[in-house]
Image (cartoon, rainbow, N blue to C red; front, side):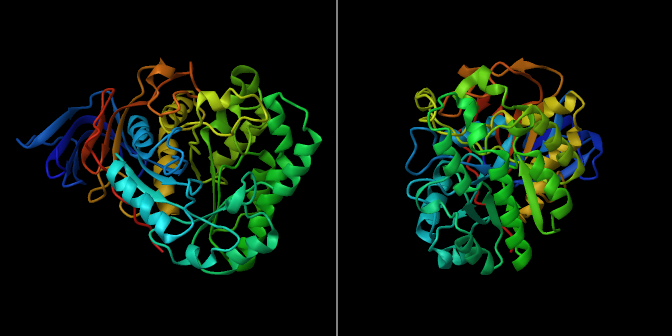
Length: 440
């Protein structure tokens, strides 16, 4: 089906940009949202979706994923990851530079864009990775959503942990800088201290809350010194959230992952190394403070940090196990289930997972259900619950930290650029997304 045809979604609860729901119909044409009304008459060229009982939301924009291609395709690749996106209602993603080769110059970025154009079922954008010596590249490459600095929890060229090296990056240019904020020196010191420990729960002790706060404070200091657009990735601690509450300039944005909201250090006893990620899971008390910061607007939006590893890798035993977990196909149901439980509203979830992301990264024509906007949409069912099952996971790693969780809000249809990419359990692998644009 080409996007020259049209889709008529009938009788959906449509989330409008003003935060109200309209029970009605929506028509897409040529990849755009063309009409929204309480009743639209079908045309003969319409593909009709009967959406009675379903809620229509803007497609999710996941602003932090690791899709492993090129170089680590045995864990995940752009095709399998974008199938998982389609199933999870994620219509666009922003991907990180720690592939092999690293995405640290124009040729590596061009290679990823070419791969994505051939393989991705959903829309895509890529970060450029900062090293200690690629300043020219990170200022000139295009198109990119921003510069990624690994201040800690990394190795090789992507680790930029010395203050003077980080400052050099903040001092030049105006492009958004996104930081993985952990204090590498503190982590290395604590790794030695706990070198004999093999319980994966020690991971949260080694990469502790102070390591996170130290790095976040440094990034904020440099952002303020140079008035530089800063985004803090995957905030994990209450002390960072409380610090940001009184020290967050208007040009700084912050994200949190669903796992830092609903998983915690008690998860190690249940799922072992599958709970291991960077920055680590924290205490249940931290969950509560992060929720408060999200609801108060201290935290701006949600990202998954989808970072798959194979079950074989996760079975190696701590500390030889890699950090990271998949998330794109469960993030929307996890968050909508929280909304159903009264933690937040559906409108807030949609803002955190779509509208606010488009705004922060200046992605035009996305993140709202509005006439003239791109037809990136997801129809979800909030009437039924079902468990997350390992055998249904589309991510190549084949597991989820939420396995067995009873969730609602699963996508029934996902539409990318006016084409149905996921319908009632089946992925349409013929659809291809487009490269995202980013305003300067």
